Image (cartoon, rainbow, N blue to C red; front, side, top):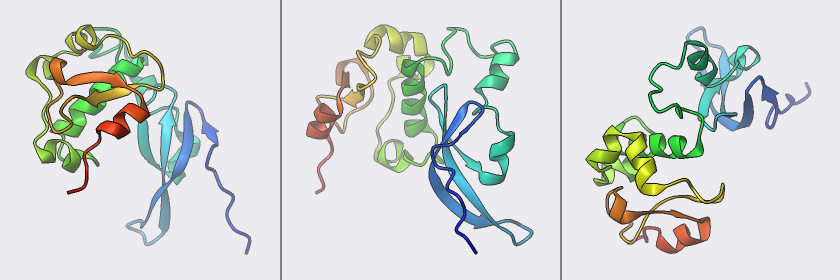
Length: 166
């Protein structure tokens, strides 16, 4: 029996398959594969392989068709800065987030003004200088996400600032 064809790198509508992340058995006893996909809007999401042929997007397409609900600033799921802000908030507040233990679980918080307002976050941080920049807690890597402790940094800058194993 030939090996199954790899779908890594394939596009389905607005998503691209990045890698296989899991395999589990359905309630009916059938093994099913789960994949990590990246939507054109920048969101990564886990999707069952059987759903890939039917998927359109991570949900951003549906939200856009519904008249922009919850988009008071007009940037939801559209800009890299919004995706960074949402990821930061989720890592620090959502206990089921895959990286919560490294952020919120360690006591790292998002300051109140940023937690409540993406436009305030954007005003304080500005646009990221390039796609190679991401948010970095600096100078205190163990500190909170707040204006006095955050910058846009390259991977090299972040590696120099990362938490050291104790």
